[in-house]
Amino acid sequence: MNQETEKTLAFFGRMTANLTHEFKNILAIIQESAGLMEDIMAISPLAKDKYQERFNNSMNTIKNQLQRGMEMASRFNRFAHAPDHNSAELELGETMVHFCTLTERFARLKNITLQADSQNGQEIKITTNPLLLYMVLFYSLDACLSVLPAQCEIRLISVKKDENAAAEIACTGKQAPSPEQFFTGLRQSNAWGELENTVEQLNAELKCNTDDLRFYLILK
Image (cartoon, rainbow, N blue to C red; front, side):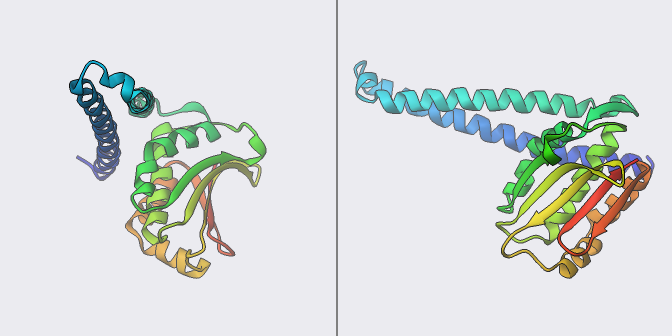
């Protein structure tokens, strides 16, 4: 097994473990809500009327979690098919929204907000390797999470940079490090080294804006 295959398998392993944790959380919430409903019904046949509001809240929780689980399963299925094609046409902003939905738990565990956006709501079409794109976004996120404290925000924004499509990674927060500390920390992280290697594989360019906590993945 070569190094690139090992790196890809490690990436899929972390993503899969993350998503199975999310599914376990969904099932645990459903189990808790169903248990509450069962307890209410066990009191007496009339208990449902007495505790109607709590009963309805539990039903709504179950419905919402089922919907969340179906969406996660659909997104994971799409992600799992990323290696199917070496090149595919994608809408960059929508792809980053999809990525953030899959990886939001990584940020949540550090009490950091993760969201995706597009510049002026514009649609940016790209033709690229879907798997490598997911990997560069993941290593970007992983590197940022390694240096940012709690209560910061990471935004992934689809933009045009030097006439090319680009993913802008912008970090903010009252307790955020200075730009010098931020980029020093990034470059010292393992994820940043993986990012640089994968950016090269993707034939993209990594450009840092050292005036603030912002860098770009320029997709050529």
